Length: 352
View 1 (tube, one colour):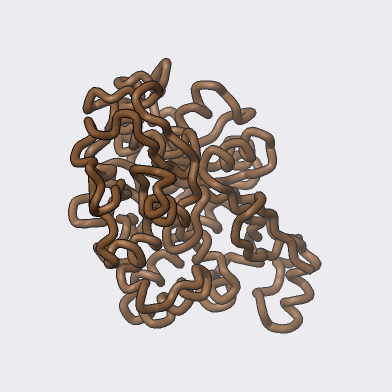
View 2 (cartoon, one colour; view 1 turned 90 degrees about the vertical axis):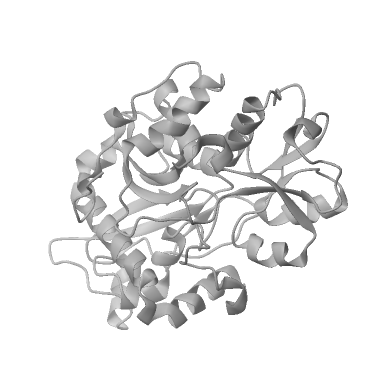
């Protein structure tokens, strides 16, 4: 009755994708009935490698939200969601024609445009989260509290963990190192470690520097075992880290489904931000992440990553880190983000 796709060794949730599934569950009162004129469009969505609360689509399109908050799900569109290890894998699925929409980092997005990996191209259609926003959390790189590493200069010859080569975290790290005169290709060893294992890898001495992101940050930092070395704002200032994209082919063929999807995304985002829903929002996040509600006190506060409540993002905020990649030699050529950007599918107008 249900279908989901997942790349190996990752958590799993099931999202309805077939008209038969919806008809069966509709009879039980679990989802809205289909439109008379035919089955809703299925959107094959590739996540960027994290689950809620980092990538809000993984929370917004869960079963409870479909039944109680979302208005277009099951009527105007369905979601077939694939969980990946990181945005490079999401980019691969888009390129292979196995996803219609996805969460990409600025680095994967730029390379996809330059190399023309996605047939017909892609466009940015909405915000996901932002780094370096004053007063909000940022992806942070840590050493052990007792480590002799005090500055980036001390990283020469050391092992550094990132989640996936080519990911936003990887590029933030490389840009910061390059700014400080460290060649990330020659002076350090960069290795892939899943986000959930960075703290353990630091304690075990398998890496000397790791990135501890939310929600793991909320568990690990209070232990006092780790010391901050730098964060994402040291690389690019304030910038768009990851965002929603859609293939131009899908936008041309199913614009109404994309608009309905994004309308529900914004509706869900604002539901999670509403103080009146705080208790239930924490409970949903705890259920998905298997974290205790107490550990999620930061969720959707200024201790969390910044998200525009209307899912608006500007081309300039995406252009900023891409310009930095070119400056530090990580891209052979630049792109004009505005040529691959369209916020018109969002339910409200964006001012910037």
